[in-house]
Image (tube, rainbow, N blue to C red):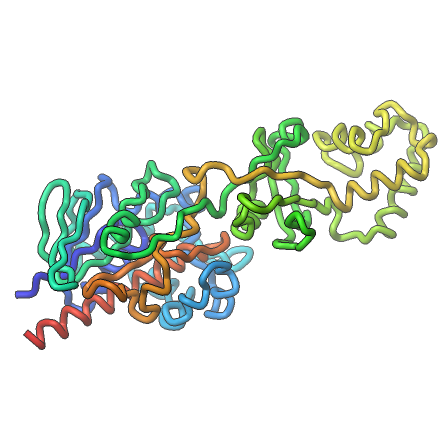
Length: 418
């Protein structure tokens, strides 16, 4: 009788690995310390769960800024559309929204985790509440797992413990420690898809202001553009947040050595000449109005005092008294509102972890360790991360699929050679 497979971690990648291995006939035990499986999965997409992105392999890879090439094989065999077909097959109707983001029709993340749990049960996967503290190795191969509550013999192990973001969900870096104990290099985890802190008092002044359809450009201290995209951002008491900022943070990896500046084009649909003509029209039409009143037609209320302060224009100045230089300063602010950022928020607030097990030490086709026979990796424990839009969960599904299937195949070959 085979000792079977132990999957460590009951999140998205771990559940997919367990399902994929069991579908291929493996005897699977899933270890998860939380009372519920998929605890982090259940809070993704504000509880709606952005399951994947309805995209082909090239689009998926284009949305993985770190070590995307490593995922080529996994994505080629299990892309966003394969993920959609999988969830449809286990009873979860899906829908595609703006940006090809895919959600359950019910808008409930619990439907995703519940469907996976039903599938695990149907495949007779044994789910145990335990935290792995060590892996047993014999002759360079996995032979068991030591948990806080028990010991488990195994001929293969999938490590799918996540990163270190959202530690309350169980992502506490356990897998990194286990991998390091076995000789794997762990690239220092850093926050990714994380809000940004700013020393600029304007952020606190505009706390709660959401700007839509703005163009965010992020430059390093040498002026090089590291990120440029249009979308939505949010001012907070500590700095900047919102979808644009979270995606931008994935490119701002070197706060230790570089300084970044965010420049916001508040009117990206209008070039400078067109916007200047509009300013002239507004100033002419409201010649006798105070500037703080007139600017309300061009900018959100919370932004108006900041625009006036930065341009040096008194709020009670009449529009007809505005100088050409003052108008020019306003125009420049509308087309390039700058916010200095000092660094990311703490890693506990990050949506995903950048860093993890070094991918050059892992087989990209099978997710197998190149150092320990019978050891496989899946999900956020690996040094790969992507933008928002369902891409990080797609990494979990694709690597979980690859690891689970390869582990089942390794067990089968082991039985044949026994």
